[in-house]
Image 1 (cartoon, rainbow, N blue to C red):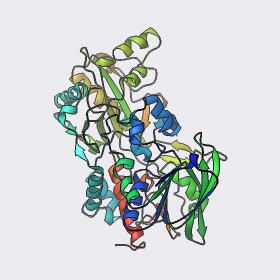
Image 2: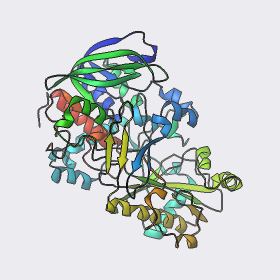
Image 3: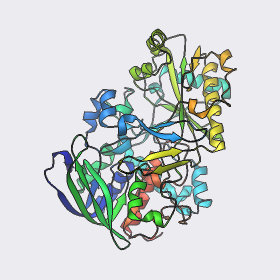
Image 4: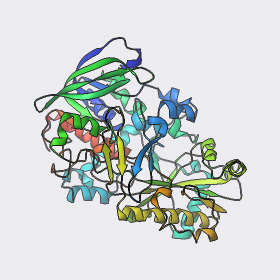
Length: 508
């Protein structure tokens, strides 16, 4: 059952075995597992409920307004020589899975080895973690994007990659069935081919009588001594304004509001008194877009929005992933003003786009702002992460020029397009960080898992230190940056937390 708070009169008081705060990849995974095990489950979601069918009929501007948090305009404030980073997240039943491209890469083995050995988490070693990853891939119906769904722009980038570095593009695994290459995955699939968690996982929870309450903002987790006993919050109207209260009494509370918001609720519980790591250690996968213009029309939107990637530079800290958002949005971001912008926007059929993701070290902090619902997030790049910005830009530009691009549009605010000869003279290494155009879709780590309260927020089971009946199961518990899109990893960790909860918290 799905209840919309905006249509509910009065206050709600509910009881459950398990109450879950957040309906994204982590929360929905726990809900399905616990409900299937016979537990009564209530899922509370701050955003509204918009079905995948409704989302698929929206224009991108409508999707941004109704499905994206802050209309896609959340930022991590760059400190020191760090760019401002636009961090995009979903808001609604399904969470950020509704606004991703559906990429379902596994965590690299060297990352899992680091978690097992350096972080002291042997249950996250490759062989031990494998069953959870495989189970998630089955849930999501993950499959490789066939080559015929690669746009001409992606094919050209692949040719440049082979010429410049001797590597071939690899097919992306995604959670789609029957993809027709509409190129709108981030803004709702018009063909209902993408399988976000509200389509692929939530139905299993609902079949086992889970109750989802949308438009429900949790403001506090309640406790009796050290034990979590439920949550209290407000029901919201369509404009996000309070219209009633909601109280849920539960035996177990699962926090899955995401790395951006989990720390706010945890600080209200007093967990921050046990460990000073709450809200720290955020990683973001800072990402940079490279646009290249070719002489001939290539119609980069004809194909899957994300169809291929390269792991060739992963050990150097870079992952390259194809993307092409709807052409109207690409055209709007072309450089220039007035006639110059109009001319470049008219050439959108001649551009190809690729993204470069940086494998970063923890640099973000979530700050509570009094009387504000949203946090202030700051992010300071370490020297090694900062040095990867010129590297990823030079790598992508070089590949495009090897493919025959006439010019590239660098991710530098206020810059003009450059040819291959002009690019040789661009001094990326001394350019101030604030000049780079930077985005992220992967906030992680603000309640990271570990074995010591001095360095982590939750233990190896997913429980915050010195609490009972409270669990965290989302991107915030990921111990370090991954270097790849995190959905499969987040869901696998959430599945493991769900099993710990069902086992009564016993270690295996």
